[in-house]
Length: 281
Image 1 (tube, rainbow, N blue to C red):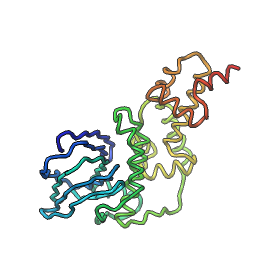
Image 2: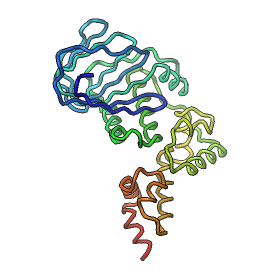
Image 3: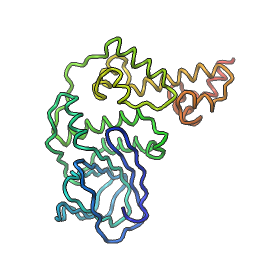
Image 4: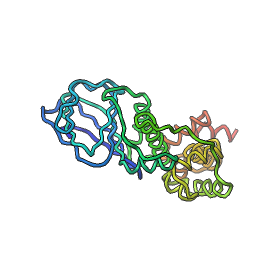
């Protein structure tokens, strides 16, 4: 990375996401990108004025990238880049085997390749990246269910738009009664900590993508939304007592009081403090 570059990284069980930015104009030198059998998808959060990119020793791009511009590179090839201006982007890196497993989970064959004209704009990936910025700002406290849900949406968009895979769902089935009871009981029991989609899906012996579809079919909510509403309900129960709101926030799985207030207000339309006063009238 060029000197002065700021990088924050969010890692899930399936892939990594990095927010990479620099306000400095780098020296005119190319940097080799490490090889791996993975795909790197970069979306620009703001215009990138000047950039050079080499693929297997051949210059394939020289110029600018607009805000929302996308580039996809297969890192098994030899790539070098030269940042010639300030930049701000989000980089999704996913191993080919993860995409293969995602496709197999959805009843599809292995992925041949991803084809993307460098510099084309993609508002979907741009907004998925924007949705991850709060988590990237504080990776240690990121909500795993939320992050996993966004990353699965990213994978689906990637293989359908750039891999030519038709992910139109066949007839959807919900969870069996036993599976639904086990999943919701697990969510409720562990509501005060971070839960990954993988551990939740494993309770039902399903892949993560299959589990999310079946859970939503059964409840009308994603697992993340169900858990959020459960946490708010638990907070309401505690607000009927004298426990300080800051303690309630942590005990219900929120990062802090500010996080609880934001989520609580979005669902209940009033802050926890106002809600508590309303119940005491």
